[in-house]
Picture (cartoon, rainbow, N blue to C red):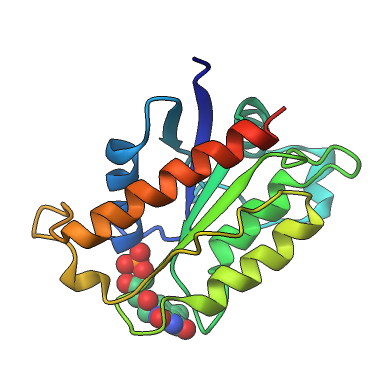
Length: 184
Ligand code: FNR
């Protein structure tokens, strides 16, 4: 059985980020044929096309890392009903230089996470819009909007909700099928 390498991109830099905690739970819940790893995005300079002439080492490393994976899983909060700038920046950095889009064809999926009630729907769907342009086939179903996340984790950041754990396992199994169908 082939194991697929999947990058997890987390749209929050906060030390105690709920999204990071969910990302870590996903690593533990992943099926055998998915190997999940968080790729850091907080060290990427803000996108500036001038920098293509004097490439920051972090951009190079990030592009190489994205190029090397079979798929990309986004776990993101919502900022003002949209995608946090740090995550959009990572999408932009990965999409260049012109003609060398590192996201091209990598099967993707999105989980949006919020302590609020609306599942960070706005971030989830704004991210889909950008991913269409960089040619990431994003899994349509199941959709994943995790609301009231503060009630789903204990003080060590571990999932306490059986129904959320079951849902995430179902989501990851569907994503594994999506990756098998669309990778490479
Ligand atoms: C937020 N938050 C938020 N939540 C939400 O559900 N919809 C929103 O539009 C916003 N907008 C927003 C803007 C800004 C600038 C901040 C800092 C926060 C609240 C957000 O969901 C909350 O801070 C989460 O805890 C962020 O995710 P992490 O850092 O816990 O992963």
